Amino acid sequence: MEDRRSTHGRRQAGPSIAPMPFWSRLRSIALYPSQGAAFWTLVALTLCGLLTLLPGIGWLLSIIVALATYRYAFEILRHTANGHPGAPEYGLDLEDGAVWRMFALFFIAMFAVGMVAALIRSPMITLLMLGAVVLLLPGSVISLAIDGSLRRALNPAVPLGLATRIGWPYLAAFCLLFVIFTSSLIAAAWLNRYMPPVVSQLAVNVATTWGLFSVFHLLGYLVYQYHETLGFEPEALSMARPADPDQRLLDEAETLVRDGHTDNALETLRGAVRSRAVTLPVHELYQRLLRQSTRSDELREHSHQYLSRLIAEKQERRALAVLRDMLDHDADFVPAQIEQATVLVERARLGGQHQLTADALRAMLRKWPRSAQAGQWSLDLALLLAERFGKDAEARTILHEALQHSEDEEQRRRIQAAASALESMAGGSTVA
Image (cartoon, rainbow, N blue to C red; front, side):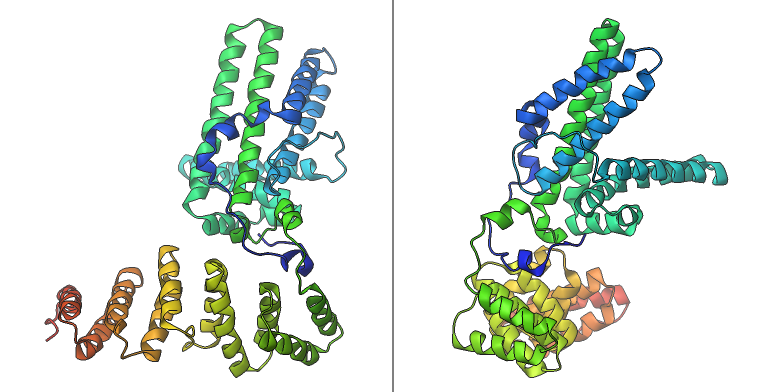
């Protein structure tokens, strides 16, 4: 999901307190419809639901109530995603077309499942198709609510990419969504069965609307919790940040870029970066312009400085993105200090970025082959290549070279054990 905000919105990004994980807020998520405007909206929609019992026009009124309910649920999602803890004020306007696009999304998704069922006539394939649609639908709804594009929401790659970037919490959130929604439907069915008609209608409306509001609040909070991963800038965080002290410098440089004077913009930023401590947005703009130029030496020099600043300010996720870009540009690039490289490699490993971990370790071994830590880097790289990428031959070569240079007996023993295991798997003799 791409953030559609301008660079002025992004440039103020900085360190912020990480939102509490959604699994630590289960009680508040379940009770969200009981607060403020959400509660009174729920009451109003529940009472309006009684109008659907009117003969003749009940079906039309049920459509209107459904549109109003989903319109407010959509507003809950967007309000929560933007970092606002309370419930949004309700408005009956449908001018932005969000709810219409959402109903279109649901209809097209179910139509696609129906077409597969009709054309293939295989219950197993139809069930798999339905499962895939249900699993990706929350991601599509999130995409639709954030950028308003039905075309992007219908592209399976968009919710799949969103789920991949979030990782296992997406599946956990999906399971929680399923539990909340299923519980509300079961409660509605039970109430409808054992209560008088009018009372049961009221109870059913409360149960289903309550579940819907909770589900959309959870979806919004998922966006808020992972806004950095998704490239989304919550409105509340943007408003809370102070103005960038280097705003005038940024405006001047961006004006020069828009006017086609990129070299002048680089000169302006270079003078500031080399003469004083500038803010991270200035480093970010300078880095981006250098990547677009052919000044490789200057890009490498500034990347060392930029990474040092990011690590010092605990912006390790952004530091990993810079490291990935630099390794794509120059396979031998490493941070300025061994300690910095070690921190980033460990962060990449813990984050499951295996390709980045392997590329960084290769570069570190080329840069510092005589380091006391080189044996451990070789062992880590070899195991990663063998276990994650199936490159046993390269892993064995790396271990051979490590054995030749390592002087630490304990380290040599562990390298020898790993080499012997790889040799036995390959059916060859152990490393001498």
